Length: 77
Image 1: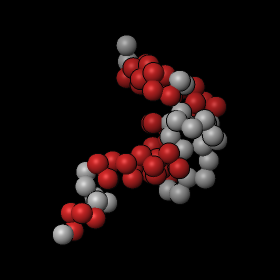
Image 2: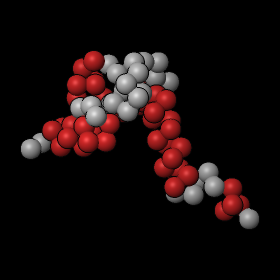
Image 3: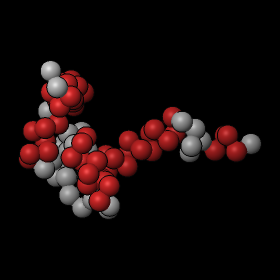
Image 4: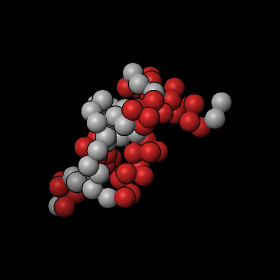
């Protein structure tokens, strides 16, 4: 099993869709909406790797940042 097949199995389990099929259809693996209007080349390249639209990429980044303490204002004290 290669990496793409493994990622498809994972995305199928998490989102009910295969990431590779979503990229072919140009939709987001997470929300199912059209994957368009990326703000940067980096974001559009991330879509090809992870099949997340710009909005879902932003939400994922915010979640990760908060989990790491980056957006947690309680650390400012």
